[in-house]
Structures are given as structure tokens and as C-alpha cells.
Length: 193
Image (cartoon, rainbow, N blue to C red):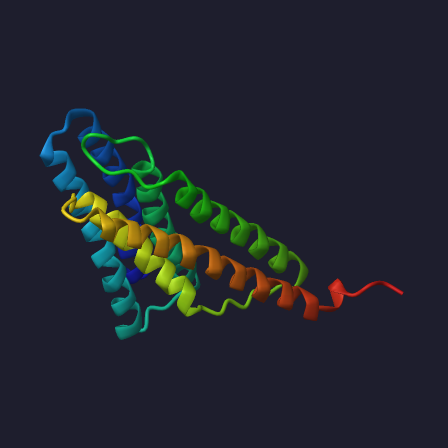
């Protein structure tokens, strides 16, 4: 168990505290709960960079880390998006359900596809694409905008939400294309003679 992996596990452990603080804030309106939620979210996001730096700097890259790190990212972001898609008025703005469905649908599709490729091909080759990174950036912007209650310009939030939806959908299509290409090149996909 490397230091980088311990930091990643700490990030995962922060997620329930983040969710609980958001729920308490929505129920009570007590700003302390919102600030604690923002703090949990920020610490988890900062630790994402820290665990990556530690893994690279001290040569602590591990197979476990390659699984845990993206899992921690995804759990934090999806937890935030799901909780913020509830009707949280008057305290917080709401992420539209279509965006939540797009994000969860893409992630489920990719997970199922990864299992199928692993079972058929044995090895999954994932090519990170700019669209996937942009989807994550726009999702983070939307979540951060809502958590910080920057209501002064609702138009910006709409841009972040539309960008998140667009790039999430496009990145999902690219991943499906990559997955079908990997399956198509494998002999198990050919018709039996």
C-alpha cells in the first residue's frame, strides 16, 4: 500500500462527509454545513493532484492506483452531481436531470463496455481524449459554481451545464467507437466458419 494509494483512499473517505454536509445544508440552511461541504470537495480535488504527484515523484505507480484514482474522481463528481440534481431550493441551484442522466448513463455504458472488452479481448486499451477531459472540467465548473452559490450570473452556470452535457455525450460516443474497434479487431468477434 503506497502513500499515493493511501491519499486516494482518503479522497474516497471524504465523499460521504461531503454528501452528508450538503444534505444537512439543504435541510437546515446552516452555512457551516455548506462551507464544510465545499471544504471536503476542495480537499478531495486538491488531494487528486497530490496523489498523482506523489505517485510520479516517488515512483509509486501501482496497478491498484490505476484503478483507485479514476474511481475516486468519478465517485466524487457523480456524488456531487446526483446530490445537486435534487430540488435544493431555496439554498442551492439544481443540476438538470437530463445532465445527471447523461453522465450516469455514459459511465454505466463505459463500465459495461469495459467488462465486455475485458472478457472478450482480455486487455482494455483506453485512450484519454480531450473531450473526456473537457467533460470533467465542465462538470467540475457546474458543481463548484453551485456549491459556491455564485448566483450573480445564472448564464455562466447554463454554459457550464450545456458544455458538460455536450462533452459528456461526445466523449461517450468516442469511447464506444474505441471499444467497438477493439472488439472488432479481436478474433473472437469474427464469425465462426
